[in-house]
Amino acid sequence: MHTDVIHYVLLSANIYHIYVQFSNGTVQTPENVAFTLYKNNNSSKVKRQRIMTAQTDRLNYVGKNFTPEALKSSSLCRYFVGVLNKETGKMEVYDAEQFSMQPIMEKNNTEEQLQDTTDEPNRTYREKVDALIEAFGTNRQKRALTSRKLNQVGSEILSKEMTKAAEGIIESKGTDLVQEVVERKEEESYSLFLPPCNTKADKRENVYEFDQLLPPVEYESLENVAAAFKNITPEELKEKIEKKQHGSYVLQELGELKYAQDIDRKARVLWYLDILTKLINLKIIKRKDLVALECPNVIIGNFLKNFTVSTFKHESIKNSISATMKCKIVSYALALALHISDFQVDLTLLQRDLKLTENRMIEIAKAMGLRITKRIMFASLSMDEGHKMGTLELPLPVYKPGGARKRKTL
Image 1 (tube, helix red, strand yellow):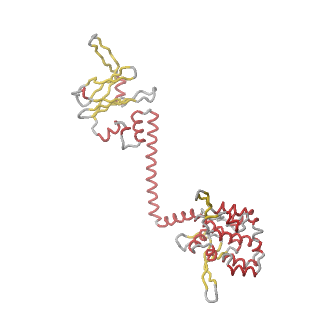
Image 2 (cartoon, rainbow, N blue to C red):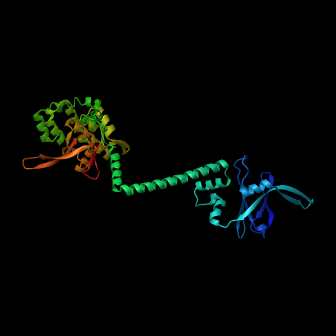
Image 3 (cartoon, one colour):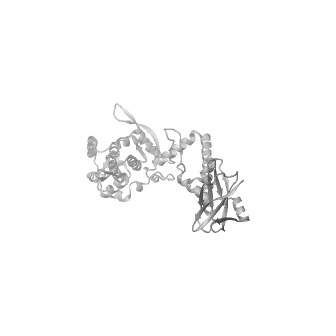
């Protein structure tokens, strides 16, 4: 084994000598060895940490001054280098630091720690910074890095355990779990447009509170415009039926208006429902459309606010009725109809007025907790047809999605 002082570098204003020792033999041509010194200047309070690398034709070497062996060696003895001035014949002695150079046998595993991480294209920026911290970082930085890696490992283990637990639940519950997920998704989608529902109400009128469907301010504003409905005569009703001035549901309820417990209230709700059926299928709602229907100002403002969405079209903001808003109008109309028809609504008539498919109407009615039945209605002397009826009963039923017939109560 051979040792030589074969290289020194200039550090600050002082000459800094390095004493290297190769552990596996003698360097035959030291002048052909390429050395590189990496140093850590993070803090003056921390001992300078350095890594020396050497490249030869056959092997690459690395030495560190902060390994346990190097620290032990430097604490037991000091190294000096004598530089002889041939002209004067005098020798000057300098402090030196020893590096024990170890050959790099596994290129892929060891070089990754030594090469300049800024030149490595396959590693992320985070990985490069971590490598520098491992090599040159302060004790505080290294502790933080270790803590972060432990947390990352812990998160990966937790994720694997959660995945394993989920797989076990799926295996044990099977299709029941899938059904539960579908139900939850449907509930979330319906909650976007259904009116506020009190599932714990002890009275049917409190399930969908009237004042939340038609606030008092709006209800009061309907007094004058709904007077024509309130005071309708049989002749006027007959004319409206012949001319089809209103939807089938509104005309049917107008025919039974005189039997209502609160005629004024029912007339106002019918007028409001008639407006909803006339507006629901318009893609763009303009204020003048509502004015043409003699809507009070408070009704106009609240309708645009609650049942339309603002869209930018042709360099201006438009109020449009999206698919979600259309479903919201249907659900509010259905909830109001329950209040004026003893909590049983002819869904078929209302569905036709609102221009929905029967399946969509049934879906919304079920989402609102109505019990669906079928009733034969006589359309003429020669034919009859089955109408779907929606009834609000307590406790509210909860339907299974996908057309399943089983239901449970809340």
